[in-house]
Image 1 (cartoon, rainbow, N blue to C red):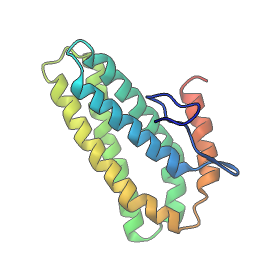
Image 2: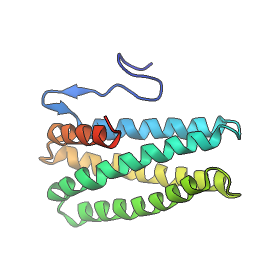
Image 3: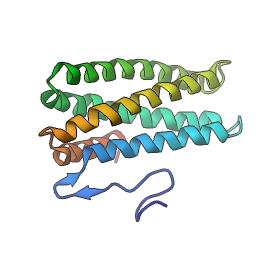
Image 4: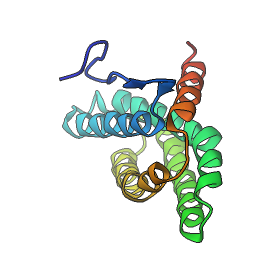
Length: 164
C-alpha cells in the first residue's frame, strides 16, 4: 500500500535529513517501471501503446538523472577497476535501452515488432536494475558518496524534466 502522498503509480519519496536518499529514489523508479511492465503484460492491445509510452517516459527521465548526476558522482567514489567497469557497462546499457525507447515511441504501437520491442526493453531494464541494485548501489553505500546531497539534486532535476 502506498504511503501518504503516494499513488499507485508514483510511490512516496522517503526523505532524510538534508534531502531524499538518492539510492532510495532510484530504486523507487525501478519499482515503478517494473509495475508498468506488469501492467503492459496484462493490458489489452488498445491500452498497450499508452502504457509503453509511460514506460518510455519514466525510463527517459530516469536515465537522464543517472547520466547527468549519479554516474559522474559515482565515478568519484567507485574509482577501482570494478567500479569503473560497472559505470561503463551501465552507460552502454543505457544506450541500448534508449535505442529501443526511440523505436517504441516512433512506432506508436503500430510496428509489427512493437510487443517484441517492449519485451526486449523489459529484459534489458531487468538486467540493468539487477546490476545497479546488487553491485553498484551497495558499493556506493560503502563509500563516502553523499546519498542525501545527490538525492536532493536528483529530486530537483526530476522536477525540471517533468516541467514542474
